[in-house]
Image (tube, rainbow, N blue to C red; front, side, top):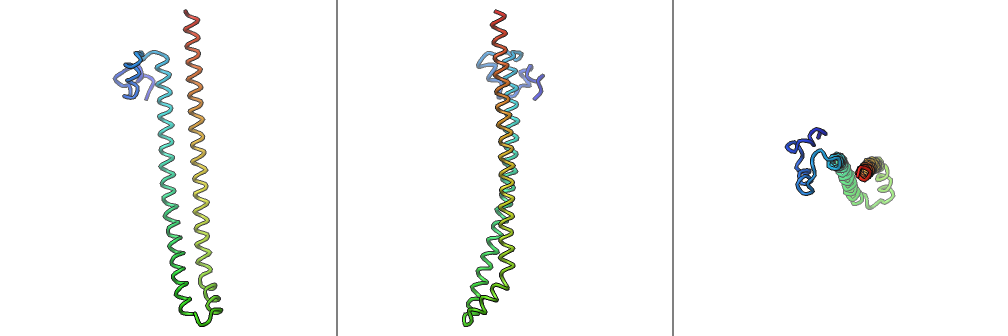
Length: 161
């Protein structure tokens, strides 16, 4: 939305039309322009937050899929472990040695995969929290600017009267 669009009610977004009719504001009124600017800043912040949420969801879906694959590998190892146990029941010590030799690399790899997923999810959460903090700071700044502008407008009106 361009500032020039605010002067022409035909080009103005639907969300701002009610300000003109409900509060009988003129498009060239400084209060209306300030409210419209604040509205557009909040709309951009909301769009940014929606994009970050979509990125987070996509990344988390990938991490969940990876976690499911890791769990499937662990379940597969469990089934193989049961088969080995049944095959080697007469000699438990030999069975333990074979299990340690055969399955230790796969278990270590599964643990590493799970650790990688945890680290990636933590980094993603950290970046989402940082983006959320930026949006909150922008909202506070927009509210501060709106308040100062409103105060200045009121002061000018009182001094002019």
